[in-house]
Image 1 (cartoon, protein in one colour):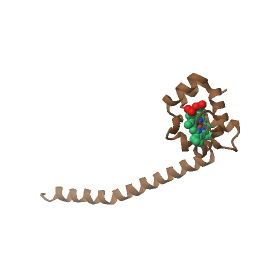
Image 2: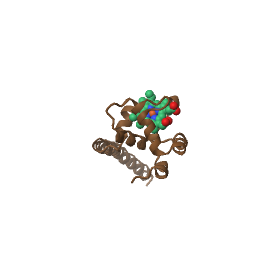
Image 3: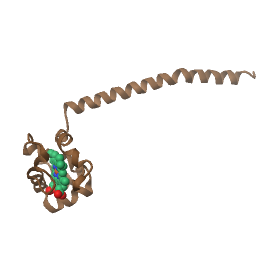
Image 4: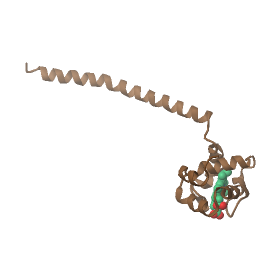
Length: 134
Ligand code: HEC
């Protein structure tokens, strides 16, 4: 009679011990599968503009060096769009302005590539306001 709670506890303990590592293994496996799936779909179908931005623009724009508008920062993009509008902002990225080099040094980029890159850097809600997709 007296022993049974202790025995019960012991049993629970051993059950937990055998279950937990399996749990951990399973969740680690799921996490890995998820990551693989995620990166595979990422590689196959990049968001338009993403590759150009990562390869040509982030070196300056990620940190905002020299006042470069930081990707997806509303406070950086809103005043530019307010002053010039979307098309002119794209033109300034294409032709260069101030410390912004023409095409961000991307010689192989077409104007469409640059526009896609600018779109990629602008926060969604500002795109809706200033550059709705046709
Ligand atoms: C060598 C650094 C550098 C690189 C590389 C660069 N930018 Fe910029 N960019 C700047 C700076 C600095 C500004 C702010 C210009 C200013 O205020 O004088 C800027 C401004 C801009 C603007 C706002 C327009 C304007 O007239 O201020 C856009 C749009 C832009 N860049 C797009 C891009 C795109 C797209 C790429 C990649 C294809 C890119 N930039 C690569 C430094 C860079």
